[in-house]
Length: 427
Image (cartoon, rainbow, N blue to C red; front, top):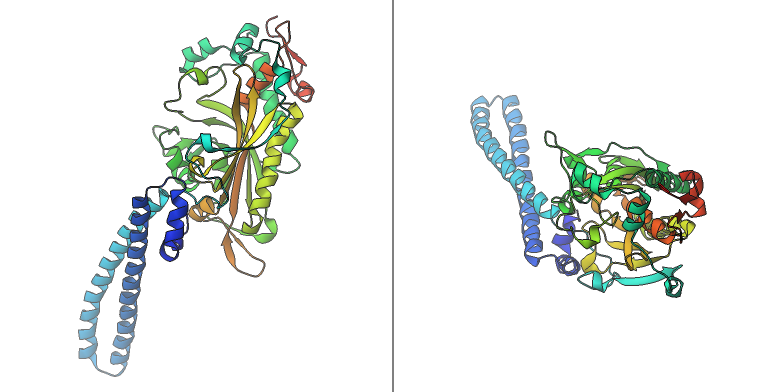
């Protein structure tokens, strides 16, 4: 969540920045009204408590002076004051609950230099790496699901029989390719990130404090009998590791990675762009997360972009870096770069990683702070990105590696992880 002081002390600028994300001004106004009401109520509660403390001291003084009747009368008055303070405290709790609800619906502020825009059509392509359109001319390119089904390494029919649409069942070489991709990505980042194996379910307050329950409240999967949610992304668990903690400045930055299975409903997404591995309810991903000092956030962000791009470069896949405009930013992010891989089988660029600078948005709600060597306590800044999201990378490898005989030649860096250099399936 954002700092409520921004609404109280710099409202016009805060409202302007939130409007760039398309936030309704009525919600911003309501949040400010509640923040003002909370501040006023705190003053009333503090004044009432001070009167109680003063009165209690006066009772003691009267008793020591032998003025018992006056002390008893003052005690009766204090009883009425105590009831009034309790009523003020109940009202404060109500206002705070309303404010907390309103603040939970306000997204993070976009960075000032994020491109202006309302949709993905306004996003900016920053650079393209390894893509030569002429190299794709003169031959037929097939979508990965056709290639994979011919090889017998992807079985959409049985996946649907087991679980419905937008699930994948991988077999043989296809399963080994996915497993190899995750091991490849973990090994590639092992020198820079500490590997974590977190639970794949988290408590409701953990997912809410990372800002994802607001974003995914119609997308996340919840267990029926418990307040536990399946991970929509490994970021939720990795950021949640330090909720409620004060870290040492010397320990920052913290860099974590985790391989997790992730679940999203992807409501309303069914269609031709969901065939094969393009968009799934359940998918496998290696996530990268950083917690750092505020002044290091931008530098760590650009380093994270390079880290997320490195697997694509090692695998020889053409990709581009896209900066999201203000209206297309995710709820928690102040800046986002997407990495998109070219898919020749569908002639489209497909997002394979989204790298986000979240500033103190998650750490403020989750109370993740650090103590400066000089003694001051501040909120850490958080960043996240996919080190490798397997479904679309799996698809891109299959499409780019297709040979004339129908087999798929793997990038050399993957051969040791998959155990073969060519996917032959049932051939």
